[in-house]
Length: 81
Image 1 (cartoon, rainbow, N blue to C red):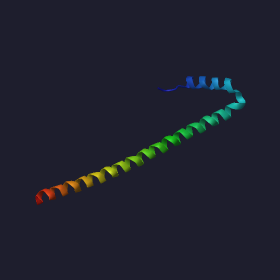
Image 2: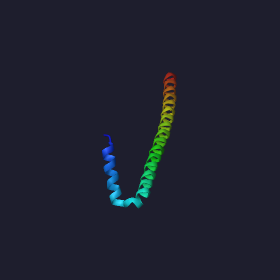
Image 3: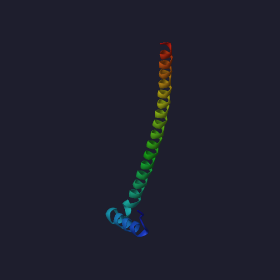
Image 4: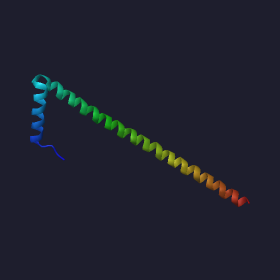
């Protein structure tokens, strides 16, 4: 879905009518800050997910090593019987 020039002009006219020419720069500034904050939040969430993925992979590797150690111990114990 794409917003064309006509739709953008219609939105601009509606904003202009609702807020007037004096408030328009402030409204645009607030919208810009909101978009910037949203992008930052998404970037932060992406970093958190990547960090959590690294932790989970590390924990998985640790569990694999522990499992292998237990299996080896069981093999050794069975050979002693």
